[in-house]
Length: 195
Image (cartoon, rainbow, N blue to C red; front, side, top):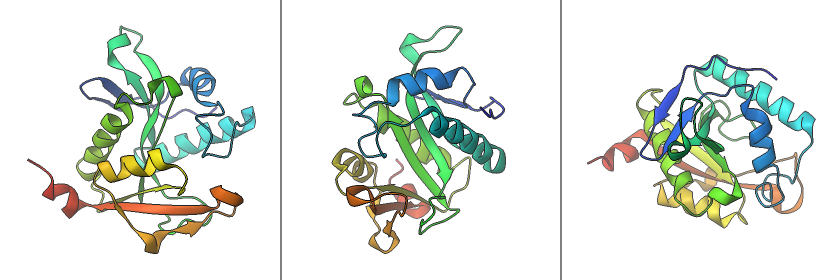
């Protein structure tokens, strides 16, 4: 699997966001390639899916200086790092039918035993802050499907607003995964919430 240079690291109160290492992928697949986690992402996937995913993340990192980052729990840390909870971060919109192709997109995926503890919100807030400061994003988008209430509820709690003009149909999927709804947060909106 491809690997980007591992030099990005950002700490929050409880988490570390960092670039991927080759050894992260087996743990990530083990903990997140489950029916519950993959419910709104096309279902459990095969090894080829994750090889392509790793390559896409590395290509995104090389092209833009960022991609979805590994999320680790600091409390488990030591010299080898903490427990891998999943990922969160920024990529560029690249779904085949994406309405904001090439623009900033935030996303997250955490293992089921990390749900309901505020980790996704903490990592996403840090990613938004980094997007608007370190990476100078003018606007950051997020996508999900209508049925994924946990995802769009978190988007709303983070201050993103519905952007129906950016909704699209994802031709890779059928049924309830085909309808994609979009949310957005502009730099001005983000700045207005700063203390």
